[in-house]
Image (cartoon, rainbow, N blue to C red; front, side, top):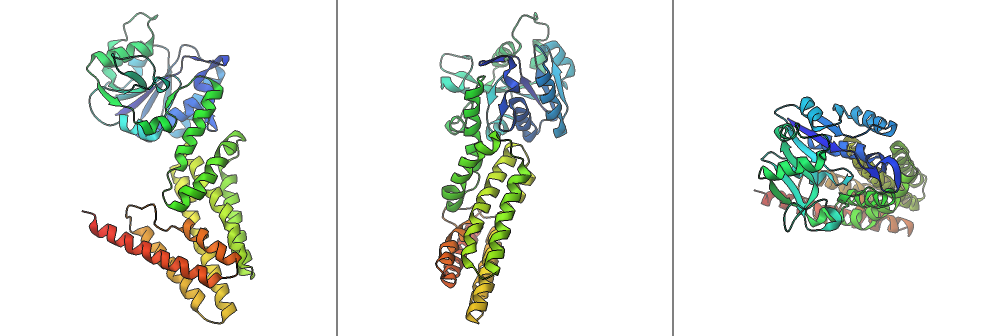
Length: 388
């Protein structure tokens, strides 16, 4: 059984009397975000170690428990030992730690005691040996908590537990440099925590891999996401705006204005932003739905352009090009091949066809995306063939 132990004992550096764990982070509190990471890693029980309980902490714990995993407050190692399952393996998160899913998942694997270490002082806590410092995450069996349960109450729970894990011969796992760039570190200052939140948000937008996503829509999402979080815009509103732009684009094209295809572009950016926001909150299913909606909008716009071109030219060329593009895209998406940066995607096809539509050269744009979709499909099939 995997369990989590979160420390929430220190006050915020710029807000005396406020626990750092209850500071805002990505539209929630830091404690809720840490809980989301542990639940995503598979934790079936979470303990929150505190020295005092505040109304804000109680509210954060109550909201965190809505994820379907019991969240219990403990005041000492002895109390934690009594509530911990004796066979559980704990992932320990330091007070004020900001990190990402990848790092927590890596530390949540099976094995002996382990601690995440770094030589970067900005991402570390206390020193564990002559060359390395603790980077805020550890893995240990419940027995380590039981080992220190009898210690005097004036001993620091977090530091004492770390020492017990180190003395048990814990494996030292280096902190990846990519994790530091993604915002990993310990922070108890509200302003600095907001900056780390933006770094984590930016890392989440990198999940989308094609060139159009990385260089256009991801950049737009990276600019918009901090503002969306700051203004506490609900996720459904972001999704609804994306759908509204997409529907508007299809309607404009259907009414005979091909330039309306460009209206779908801010809709795709909105859905990309919404997908990253959902991923931050641990709503992976909603994030996947928004990713799929991007494809739906692109297909609808391309099909509308094909139908409009067919009506204008009194030939089937436009419709055939649109249908072939859609078929090639669907097959390539279902191939489950490892996506390469240069490959086409629904967002990329929409980005390519929009300038042609604005210039009144719809057939040229449809021909361009058809060729691109066929090249992508051929590459995907070849990639699947080479896969062992």
